[in-house]
Length: 276
Ligand code: FES
Image (spheres, rainbow, N blue to C red):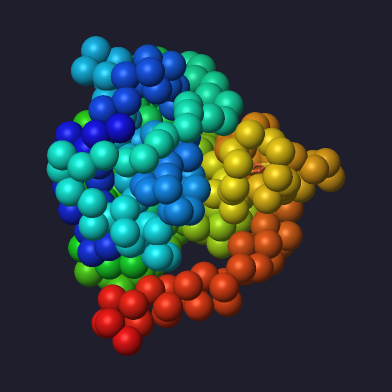
């Protein structure tokens, strides 16, 4: 699982090109992998942001938030991850429906890109909207532009594109375009807001959920979400679900569950680094 190339996309966000021929052979848009960078490393789920079957490579994008993801992002070209498990999850169904609005917030661009690319290749008109906190946090803009018929950007601080939320762009698009489907990926509050707008305009919306994961094979229950009143597992039933049916309130509270422990691990890591 050798790192063939590494690129800094934004502060704290790194893109890796990884040699993984068996995964590349089977990967489809919507799939993800679980990565362990070292023996005692955490199991980190990362979306397959792109794949090349001929070269036998996959592209991963990692945001250094916790101890393990920060260590992963420090790894260099030529080094190798300990193991990658995948492709996991159900592939996103690609159909020709007409016009599709592809909406991403923050790191959500990485899982959105392979879907937008496949939707575009299938002959759909792809209208993309990408949001980030500030200009330097916008990632994969060239790749997204290449697979979009129209693209617009938003930043929370107004440093690039629309000053405001990406869901404002979605609303503006739905006001003037006849959109058959929306795909939204990003932070949970952003996806919940996108679903609200989609419901208002009565357009079907698919979201890709980034629930906490451990095994990634449906065994631990860590990634459970409630969809349409039923318990589903993101890793084996998703990660894409009908946004209108997802219980976002529950998902948000589950995501905060280990916040304290994560902060503690990060703090310990910083103390170790400082040699204290
Ligand atoms: S990660 Fe364990 S059930 Fe999905």
